[in-house]
Amino acid sequence: MDIKKYFLILSFLLVSVIAMLYGISPQWFTYTFLGISDLNLNLAHILRAVMCLYISLGLFWLLSAFSQRYRNMAVLTTIIFAAGLVVGRVLSFVVDGIPSPLLVFYLVIELIFIPLAYWVFRLPE
Image (cartoon, rainbow, N blue to C red; front, side, top):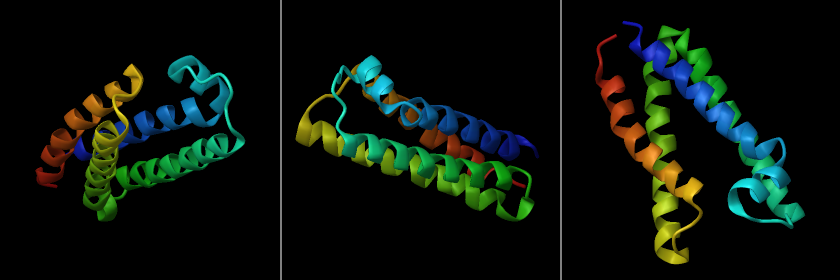
């Protein structure tokens, strides 16, 4: 069944694009999407580090798409990855308030993604 394979390829593409959007030029991203005109050096550092974290996980998903041995584990990590982001976002909503529309959109996408990923995980090999 190729659904898991294509799901992992799509997951790699999505997370890589999102990571590169804010990691390649943090100044542009924060100004364009978050309204932050003066980006702190430390925040730029964090955004670039997180970009590489996302891309490294994405590469694991891409490689696992072509390896039966790691495919289920990779799909499971997509669930854990998205669920961790959801918990962090909800915590921030409660503690800090509602962020920019883009970040709310990310939450919606992640909430849709988790049950979809679980469905893919439960599919037979």
